[in-house]
Length: 155
Image (tube, rainbow, N blue to C red; front, side, top):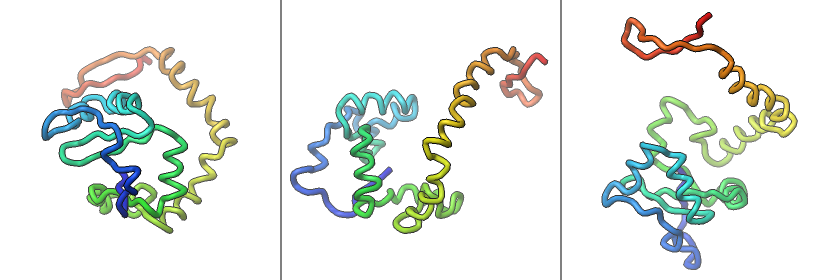
């Protein structure tokens, strides 16, 4: 979730961004809880940037890679993360998710090699093969002593 640290220019007012219809007061909160992917797919149909709301909080969904790069990389100093994420700081610390400014840039540079195209290409067969391996593995369902639904192999 990203908010701007300075007002938008008059030619790009937030009200000009198409909004996903929602319920009074709740906005798109119920749809967000039910199926986030479907909600963001609906937002993507409105255009490269769409506005939705989780209760009183406006959320801007960016579905265009070029615009996302412009926001997150080229103009990162113009945006700051939502104060709503601060409750996670005691749990997660000042890692990539919550860091801002120079700390965020430093964390991003440290993680970049893990996401290099060559490294991703090496892990691709493992990711693509996992569903096939799971489909071949026989599975049973049972209720555990704690009454929880469990799945396990027949072996």
